[in-house]
Length: 182
Image (spheres, rainbow, N blue to C red):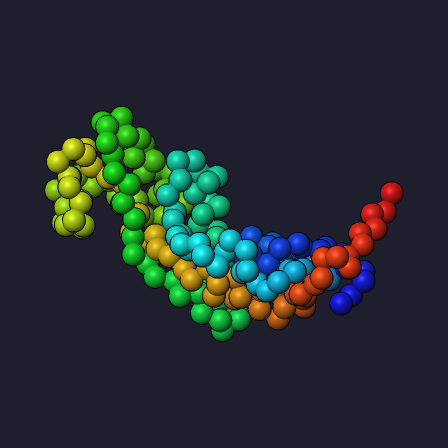
């Protein structure tokens, strides 16, 4: 393992892998990801891998959209499948206020190029016949939502980062000493 790097990313889950990937994409290839077990051995391996474009704030929606693009980009760059399944998503409006908010979100989604449809209870029943629509006012429908395999996505991000020159190491945490310059 290198003793001197520009950036050391601690943790080999989806977040650490994403950080390493984007550091490498920005040219910071003298970066290393350090994990004391194996990639995804923490909470990533059992996460649902849900990917959504739905967020009430534009900055949140941009973050979600960027994550999905990153997974798909890393899949292409690494030849490691992320197993993205585009299933769509529904957010049910239990009140008239929620339904109005969904309508208010439409322009920001259009500006971001993300499809968002406000559906009637009847349309919700057509999209998902198992939902009881008697007490809802409608739903926000984001047809491009889905899910990825979190293990595959993590490996794709790390492999793509390593292809750009970054590295990933399995380490013994008891043998690490950190020297900070003052």
